[in-house]
Figure 1 (cartoon, helix red, strand yellow):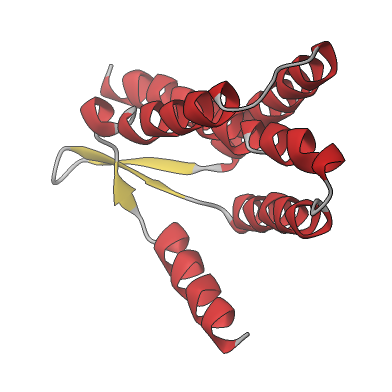
Figure 2 (tube, rainbow, N blue to C red):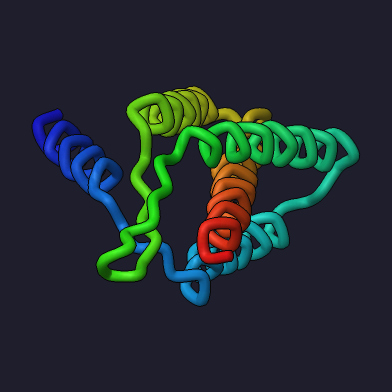
Amino acid sequence: MVSYLGVFIVIVLIMLREKQVRPARMWVIPVLLMGVMVSTISSIKLTPLSIMMYISCLMVGLGIGVWKGKLEKIRMNHTRGIVTTQSSIAGIILFFGILLVRVLVGYWSREHALISLTNALMFIPLGSICSRRYIIYLRYKQLMG
């Protein structure tokens, strides 16, 4: 339990830190996460129900990402000529709420029936990361003129 608390504190501190926006590097994590999702999905049998769950979770994730992207603090540092972003407290709470739901469902899914649901829940962070970074990119382009 203490190790989880330590990891939680480190993640919060990293998320609260102001980071420079680098458009060329913004898409590395979403592409890696998509690769993980494709490899996970390809190893199981797809059913119409699981595909519907994947699409619905992806849509929820896209909506959450847009919301989190709009909550981000994005500023232009005129002295250094860079754009920085900082996560809001609401975005951090939302992130950990989704993570908690995913962990709880994973804990309860020892039965085969919930494996598709745990895989589907991984589409929420994927959609969230992609749409959040897209919103940040749009705001970056707006600030840079």
